[in-house]
Length: 179
Image (cartoon, rainbow, N blue to C red; front, side, top):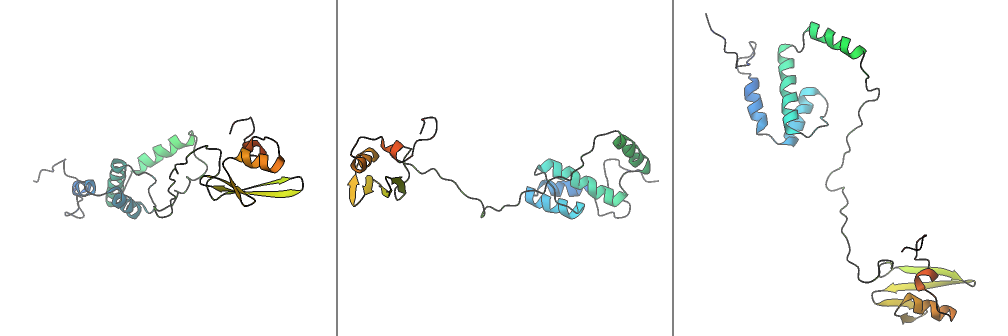
């Protein structure tokens, strides 16, 4: 008479199959490889990227596939418990699919001077007394009507003949007075 070792979980149908060996192999796999194996075993993609969780769920499903899953009594008890529970009525959201190539990398662009000013190369426009005024933002000043000015206030004074705050004249001040 053979003595059965309770630490071994080999199936009687296939002596070469061992959950212990499968788990040992899965521990050496990457999370991406485990996610692929999860999809293969379960028939749908995993939403989790937790390695231990994936290993446990794959091993359980492999064992359930091999040995028959839960008993009828356990399934009936689960059905009883579900009757009184609040269930999710909508299926879970599909995972966002994006590859690294599709992601946009945002890099802060160092800007000298006042943060209220647009980047060099931008064009400021304003309608004033029936005329459309066009001012180009340069690296070291502003160009209006073929002349370069050191500040927006100097451009506004050249246009109106009076002192103006250049940021206000060209509408670069947000509501509430803060730029």
